[in-house]
Structures are given as structure tokens and as C-alpha cells.
Image (cartoon, rainbow, N blue to C red):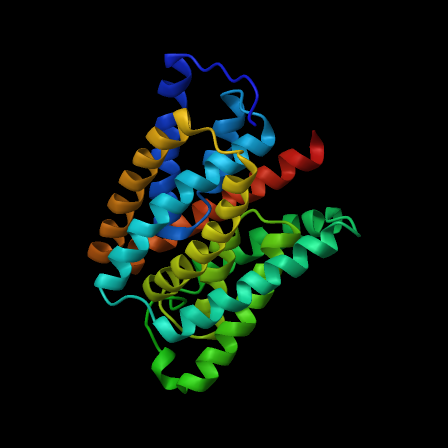
Length: 259
């Protein structure tokens, strides 16, 4: 049970716009959870309830952004499906291992790596600009996509923040997708992992539906608008939002280290 949670109308007015913003950013470049989860916690939800409610609104929103990208033919479905399946395995392994060892070393590593990734993204004007994935055979793309899903899924289970953003980067760097298709593929992986996690939270009764339902509506609105903007504007929109998502992740990690 969630226990006694008493939210005021003011709490809803504060939280729901952040959920909309999180859905908007997440549909464009990943990283929406860096906005939505702190908003739920700030509203006074216990951490497990915040995680569960966040997963509910995120999963609902991702369904719609994924559908938009699929309808616009911006998903390489065989590769995305392989990535999604291996991401679930990787996430399970990462969750098991984090119970045995500390993830603190990864926080310090990311403090160094994230500015480097952001600089590379800004300096390499060709990164994610053209879709050259067809130059790679489908079997190779599926293999690399599976490995990417496994590794990023492991990261998601082991540490978590910024999973979608890093997966977009891996798709662009290793599989030579442009940012648009990389983002579309990522949504399939995100959807699979969100549904799997949400099922566990629902069984445990951790979702706080009085907030989760209006938050889902806001998340859906953000995802719909964000995915439509990507379909219309393409890579020139994703690149700056991608860097913004990296900076949000860096701020989150630094905050966790110094508090």
C-alpha cells in the first residue's frame, strides 16, 4: 500500500507542468526522468511511490511517442526489437550486480565523461546528421543493436539516469543512425523496459493513481508534441536538446555526490 498521501491542489499545479516538460524532453532526446522523478519527490511522494508513479506516466507517454515515430517510419524495428529484448536482460543483470557492489565509481566516471560527450556532440557536426545505417548489413545492425541494448540495459539496472540519452548516442556512434532514427529506436527499448518495471510496481501496489492519471495525461501531451516536433524538424532539434539532457544528467550526478 502507498500509505497516507495528502496532496493539495497547489502540489498538482506544481508537479504536472514538470511532467509535461519531462515528456517533451524525453520524446526528443531522452532524460525526462531527470525532471519528472524529482518533481514527484518534491510533491511529497515516498521514493518507491514516486518511482512507480513516474514509471506509470512515463510508460503512457512513451506509448504515444513510439507510435508517432513508428507511423513516420523513423524506427528500424528489427534492430530496435533486438535491443529491447537484450536491454531487459542487461537491466536484470545490472540490478543484481548493484546489490553486490557500489555504483559510486560510475558517478565519478560520468562527471568526466559527460562533458566530453557533450563537447564531441557539439564539435562533430556530422554526428547523427545523416542516416548511414543501411551501409551496415542488417545482421550486423541487429548484433550491434543487441549488444547496445545489453550494455545500456545493464547501465539502466546498475545506475539508471540518462539511459535513453546514452542509447541514442550509442545508436548514432556505432550503428551510424541519424539522431531521429536513433531516437525512434530508443523509444522501443524504453517502452519495453518501462512496461516491465511498471508491471512490478503495479503488482506491489505502489502507483499513486490520484496523481498518476493526470500526470499520464500531461506526459502523453508532452510526448505527442515532442515527437511531432522531431518528425517536423529532425536532427537540428534533437542535437541541442540532447546536450541539454546531458547537462541535466551531469547536474543530477554532481548534486548526488556533494549532498
